[in-house]
Figure 1 (cartoon, rainbow, N blue to C red):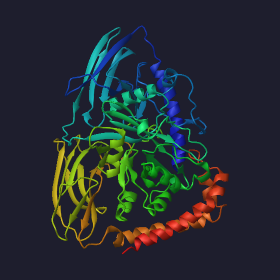
Figure 2 (figure 1 turned 180 degrees about the horizontal axis):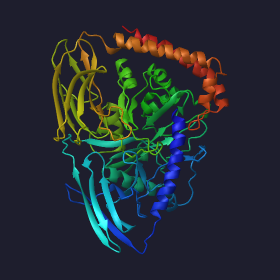
Figure 3 (figure 1 turned 90 degrees about the horizontal axis):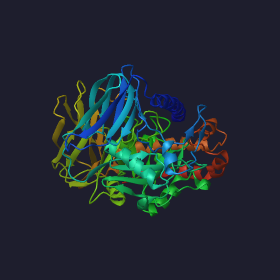
Figure 4 (figure 1 turned 60 degrees about the horizontal axis):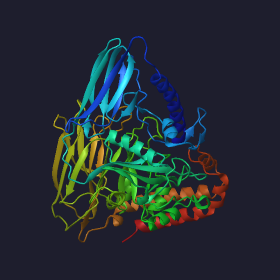
Length: 567
């Protein structure tokens, strides 16, 4: 269960933080030496922010006192696994001093830190390895250095840019991270981390719980929350309406925090209010928080209302598309999104999973939101996609007659890695229609294919790392475009096809089972879910809202059958 993993991750993070602080506290000794590091953009030859790793021959990571603070908040977890919200007091300087100054990279199992481009480390004499990274658009740079006693050496790490040629207007974002936004100084500190990851947009999400919405507090919402420095933008959102009973949900673009303890389980009410305010609403964590093969109850409930705008499909260094594909096959034009959930899982890195959106006009909070709403997106852990269907991009519709040829074109840019071929797939209604594999050092894969259609469909481009389709211990290279929709004159709509009816009936059965459980408030399973430490639901709140939730579950089951039987 994710809550248990979350507790363990928090405890490990606390132990690692203590170890890192001890490492950073090592002062100059009689045989000390100094490294001065500068990170360079290989294209512009300018000094750039980056993520750095400095390790000695024993594998020990060294974090300088000058490492940038990393604004982040997932609440406080004690070594006993108890949760409480962080209470912020003091000025920006004291708050930032208490923030983490390093991140754990699970793929190399080392602590790393952020630099504004230049860093000085006082270290014992010896051998050191230095590695600089700056998101998927740059190849990492590394160097080995030998330091003698009392010696000072300078190192320039040059980051070579990826040879990508995306059309103008594409910006990258982490659509799910948690950072408090209480004063401009915290925003400026977060922008420095974004520069180091070459991440254009950070969606800073306040975390809601049934008892309190106080974690990772945001001072403003909607376009009023925007903090922008050039092509770097922070916007506030919310991971609110989150219980292990129903699942976790997200809202982007809302004008306020939608949190009513008296109707917390009635997710659709808050979503309706947010939508009236111009927001978009979606599902977090792939749509299955507890059971990988079964969508969270919130998915069929809100799908039956045609209320889901987007769903996270890329997170925790892995992709999960099953629930998103089912939503699309029900005829719902749901957008894929991605985000790291930093810092709420051990080993997450800001921007590790990111959403690219094609913005019309200059980058702004409103234009970014509209790009997502329109579906002009792809998600990725590295590869970049340029994808067209008969000249139309993700989120758009192509109208054809039966048997008309439809041209599908795509270009994938990636960082070649030895013995790790990429596989590019054309996906039609969730099935693979065409595959192109490549294992050379060009860093580019092209696909050009024609298909015909008899009935309405959706088409997308998917990239898999063939040697690591379910990655955990090394970085994946996976990506997925948003869908292009095919409308066929005289053909069946997606909702009228057998696949839609099958999905609707299966989800209806699942909701009927949930209704049976909810009919008995003493069910042991639900008492366990109510007591989940990360997102507890007070028993009194459940008791007062159970009847209305039960009514909605039954109504949603009936609505799904109506969707499945539409003609």
